Image (tube, rainbow, N blue to C red):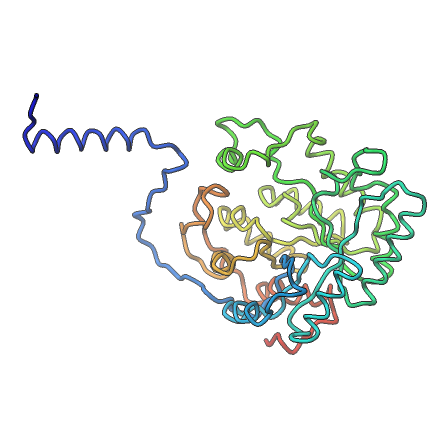
Length: 362
């Protein structure tokens, strides 16, 4: 039997570990930055804010005091729950809120598109929405399933600008409630999944997010449907979720805002795009300060500080919280206080004027 000295064994082990390190995949590579720069972690927002984009599916029965404690730790004044449902489901959620914290939560209604194509569907859906608003809903949330997954009674894809849906958008304008709408997904989900795709890691780890021009339609077609619908209903105010997937092209987004004065944008889930272009993003926020709203999307209190740090500080090269979503570093926009206040709460107060304004102090 061959015997090795201690030194040889150590050398062999070192070589083995080195080989393993060299074979490490991109998914595992996550280096710690050696850059030494001023750091200002921001655990709490400078101003009390409204989260215009949250989802609390169990709000009818959940303990709201736990949510309030987390909200207070972040300086969140009002949470907008976009997952309100409709009818009795909505009423149950509203009841829990009204019984405990009526001024801290807002609930948006949802529409069931499964019966599109039935006679009088549009009129009936608009009537149900009106009843939901009378019950206490403050707006309408449209999920990305419209344009991606929703089918009419004949099995055809329901386009975002399908004229059978017009009574819904018209009713929102009549009632004076905003529509927060999510259409499509990042354009990269439609692009080839190769070494040039920035979302390669996300698509590898979450393959169901990959799309194509036939699954179910080209990205630009869905986006164009949304914009045509906005223009067709100028009296209705639309909050385009995720900055309409143009946070990576702010010049184009600015042109769209100029074209559609009834369109607003929420920053939920796109802070990583803004944090890698701090100078251009800051200029955009200043120019369109009346049209941008704060939102986060997935409820995870530990992720909010990255949003605060990007918006409020001038910090450089700090990490994002999901590598698969954005493997690059963040930079702060250092927004002026008057712009911050509009993004954090003033713009939302204009769109939902019945909110308790006493929660927000200058």
